[in-house]
Length: 257
Ligand code: CO8
Image 1 (spheres, rainbow, N blue to C red):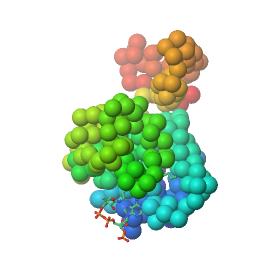
Image 2 (image 1 turned 180 degrees about the vertical axis):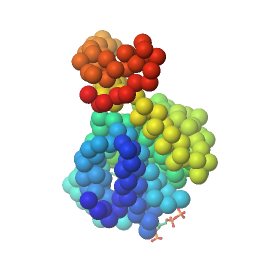
Image 3 (image 1 turned 90 degrees about the vertical axis):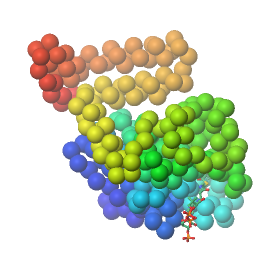
């Protein structure tokens, strides 16, 4: 399907999705959010998704302020729900999602990056949750995910002050895994995707499920969940293949079954 605000490329299991709204530094209006929802609902054949921003300046500069400016309370709820739902859908995709943060990741842009499994960034990227300066709070699940990623203390500082931090600071606090020169960012994301493609896809999906669901459980429930998912791996052909390949000193050839 053709999108107005998304550029999507599929290549041998890796999908690169670029948010592309150049007039607003890739801000998320409700059309962008609906397109994102549609796109991530139709990723058959994808084994790794990379989300990035079109252009050199911005990943996503937030939710679209010109659209939000006129919302009433009910419409505010609705807009927040739309973004939160699509970000949750991204978080729950059964394969890895890498955010390649190429520039501004502010407000809803930082929240989109946080809904991805892994964030890597250009040294030029900037992160922040500046919503309180606009009279709102992070509304696409930033108050939930930011403290989980970087701890409550720094998350509260970022959200209450609205301060914008540079990529090196994002790296220091664990908001991103690594930083790269701008031209190295996509090659690094693709290289990471290739490493994932070499592994058993069902196992990666189950590991993701175990981490995501286990995080919100108590220790015993999380360990029981992992045990259940671990057991399921032994019902797959890829488990037999992976272990047979190891024992016979050959490269495994996984079939996603
Ligand atoms: N929404 C709409 N338009 C935007 C946005 C945005 N978030 N960000 C940038 N733009 C537009 C600018 O208005 C400008 O348009 P124009 O050329 O027509 O004047 C164009 O993009 C270029 O921007 P600038 O000229 O401002 O570029 P600068 O390089 O000077 O500055 C910044 C770049 C620092 C990124 C600056 O544009 C900025 O501060 N943008 C807003 C950042 C922000 O506050 N983001 C958070 C938004 S709130 C949010 O995301 C809440 C999410 C949850 C919502 C829940 C709803 C209920």
